[in-house]
Length: 152
Image (cartoon, rainbow, N blue to C red; front, side):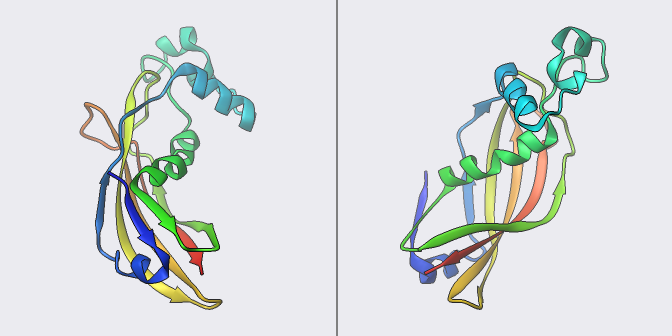
Protein backbone atom coordinates (compact mmCIF):
# COMPACT_ATOMS: atom_id res chain seq x y z
CA UNK A 1 0.00 0.00 0.00
CA UNK A 2 1.36 3.39 -0.99
CA UNK A 3 1.66 6.05 1.70
CA UNK A 4 0.88 9.62 0.57
CA UNK A 5 2.58 12.62 2.14
CA UNK A 6 1.13 16.07 1.48
CA UNK A 7 3.86 18.67 1.80
CA UNK A 8 7.02 19.00 3.82
CA UNK A 9 5.41 18.83 7.26
CA UNK A 10 3.94 15.41 6.51
CA UNK A 11 7.32 14.29 5.16
CA UNK A 12 8.98 15.36 8.41
CA UNK A 13 6.40 13.35 10.35
CA UNK A 14 7.48 10.18 8.52
CA UNK A 15 10.90 10.10 10.22
CA UNK A 16 11.50 6.61 11.59
CA UNK A 17 8.54 5.07 9.76
CA UNK A 18 8.75 1.72 8.00
CA UNK A 19 7.10 2.09 4.59
CA UNK A 20 6.68 -1.64 4.00
CA UNK A 21 7.36 -3.58 0.80
CA UNK A 22 6.61 -3.21 -2.89
CA UNK A 23 5.19 -5.91 -5.10
CA UNK A 24 7.59 -8.47 -6.57
CA UNK A 25 9.19 -7.59 -9.93
CA UNK A 26 10.73 -10.22 -12.20
CA UNK A 27 14.15 -9.45 -13.62
CA UNK A 28 14.07 -10.60 -17.23
CA UNK A 29 16.87 -11.10 -19.72
CA UNK A 30 15.27 -8.41 -21.89
CA UNK A 31 15.56 -5.90 -19.03
CA UNK A 32 19.18 -6.88 -18.42
CA UNK A 33 19.98 -6.56 -22.14
CA UNK A 34 18.29 -3.14 -22.31
CA UNK A 35 20.35 -1.96 -19.34
CA UNK A 36 23.51 -3.29 -20.99
CA UNK A 37 22.65 -1.31 -24.13
CA UNK A 38 21.92 1.85 -22.14
CA UNK A 39 25.20 1.66 -20.19
CA UNK A 40 27.43 -0.05 -22.77
CA UNK A 41 28.19 -2.77 -20.19
CA UNK A 42 28.05 -6.04 -22.12
CA UNK A 43 29.90 -8.25 -19.61
CA UNK A 44 29.10 -11.88 -20.47
CA UNK A 45 27.80 -12.71 -16.98
CA UNK A 46 24.89 -10.41 -17.80
CA UNK A 47 24.17 -10.79 -21.52
CA UNK A 48 25.40 -14.24 -22.61
CA UNK A 49 23.06 -16.86 -21.09
CA UNK A 50 24.88 -19.80 -22.67
CA UNK A 51 28.32 -18.79 -21.42
CA UNK A 52 26.88 -17.68 -18.07
CA UNK A 53 25.53 -21.22 -17.43
CA UNK A 54 29.14 -22.29 -16.83
CA UNK A 55 30.01 -19.13 -14.90
CA UNK A 56 30.16 -18.54 -11.16
CA UNK A 57 26.39 -17.95 -10.79
CA UNK A 58 25.05 -20.78 -12.96
CA UNK A 59 23.34 -18.34 -15.32
CA UNK A 60 23.15 -14.66 -16.20
CA UNK A 61 22.76 -12.06 -13.46
CA UNK A 62 21.49 -8.49 -13.43
CA UNK A 63 23.99 -5.67 -13.26
CA UNK A 64 24.31 -4.34 -9.72
CA UNK A 65 23.60 -0.87 -11.01
CA UNK A 66 20.45 -2.14 -12.73
CA UNK A 67 19.24 -3.33 -9.33
CA UNK A 68 20.20 0.03 -7.83
CA UNK A 69 18.42 1.95 -10.61
CA UNK A 70 15.17 0.20 -9.75
CA UNK A 71 15.10 1.98 -6.37
CA UNK A 72 13.37 4.97 -7.96
CA UNK A 73 10.36 3.27 -9.58
CA UNK A 74 10.01 0.87 -6.65
CA UNK A 75 10.24 3.70 -4.09
CA UNK A 76 7.36 5.39 -5.91
CA UNK A 77 5.23 2.36 -4.96
CA UNK A 78 5.99 2.97 -1.28
CA UNK A 79 5.65 6.75 -1.00
CA UNK A 80 3.69 9.27 -3.04
CA UNK A 81 4.80 12.84 -2.32
CA UNK A 82 2.36 15.63 -3.14
CA UNK A 83 2.47 19.35 -2.48
CA UNK A 84 6.15 19.86 -3.32
CA UNK A 85 7.56 21.77 -6.29
CA UNK A 86 10.65 19.65 -6.80
CA UNK A 87 12.21 16.40 -5.61
CA UNK A 88 15.79 15.42 -6.40
CA UNK A 89 18.10 12.49 -5.84
CA UNK A 90 20.84 14.03 -3.73
CA UNK A 91 23.04 10.97 -3.54
CA UNK A 92 23.80 7.76 -1.74
CA UNK A 93 25.52 7.36 1.60
CA UNK A 94 26.18 3.65 1.27
CA UNK A 95 25.49 0.91 -1.26
CA UNK A 96 26.28 -2.79 -1.08
CA UNK A 97 25.34 -5.74 -3.30
CA UNK A 98 25.44 -8.78 -0.96
CA UNK A 99 23.87 -11.22 -3.43
CA UNK A 100 23.50 -11.32 -7.22
CA UNK A 101 20.08 -11.21 -8.86
CA UNK A 102 19.79 -14.09 -11.28
CA UNK A 103 17.80 -13.50 -14.45
CA UNK A 104 14.29 -14.81 -13.78
CA UNK A 105 14.42 -13.94 -10.07
CA UNK A 106 11.89 -11.65 -8.45
CA UNK A 107 12.88 -8.69 -6.32
CA UNK A 108 11.04 -6.21 -4.14
CA UNK A 109 11.96 -3.12 -2.16
CA UNK A 110 11.62 -2.62 1.57
CA UNK A 111 11.97 0.98 2.71
CA UNK A 112 12.27 2.91 5.95
CA UNK A 113 12.51 6.66 6.46
CA UNK A 114 15.67 6.87 8.54
CA UNK A 115 15.74 10.63 9.02
CA UNK A 116 14.16 13.85 7.77
CA UNK A 117 15.73 17.25 8.40
CA UNK A 118 15.29 20.76 7.08
CA UNK A 119 17.82 22.06 4.56
CA UNK A 120 18.50 25.59 3.28
CA UNK A 121 16.26 26.80 0.49
CA UNK A 122 12.97 25.75 2.06
CA UNK A 123 13.35 22.02 1.73
CA UNK A 124 13.79 18.80 3.62
CA UNK A 125 16.34 16.06 3.22
CA UNK A 126 15.22 12.46 3.65
CA UNK A 127 17.56 9.58 4.37
CA UNK A 128 15.96 6.37 3.14
CA UNK A 129 17.15 2.94 4.22
CA UNK A 130 16.43 0.51 1.40
CA UNK A 131 16.75 -3.25 1.10
CA UNK A 132 16.19 -4.97 -2.23
CA UNK A 133 15.03 -8.47 -1.36
CA UNK A 134 15.24 -11.53 -3.63
CA UNK A 135 12.28 -13.89 -3.50
CA UNK A 136 13.36 -17.11 -1.78
CA UNK A 137 16.78 -15.83 -0.72
CA UNK A 138 18.01 -15.07 2.77
CA UNK A 139 20.47 -12.47 1.48
CA UNK A 140 19.42 -9.16 -0.06
CA UNK A 141 20.43 -8.08 -3.54
CA UNK A 142 21.14 -4.52 -2.47
CA UNK A 143 21.32 -2.54 0.75
CA UNK A 144 21.47 1.23 0.28
CA UNK A 145 20.90 4.51 2.05
CA UNK A 146 19.60 7.05 -0.42
CA UNK A 147 19.40 10.80 0.12
CA UNK A 148 16.52 12.78 -1.38
CA UNK A 149 15.70 16.46 -1.16
CA UNK A 150 12.19 17.86 -1.50
CA UNK A 151 11.28 21.52 -1.85
CA UNK A 152 7.99 23.37 -1.26
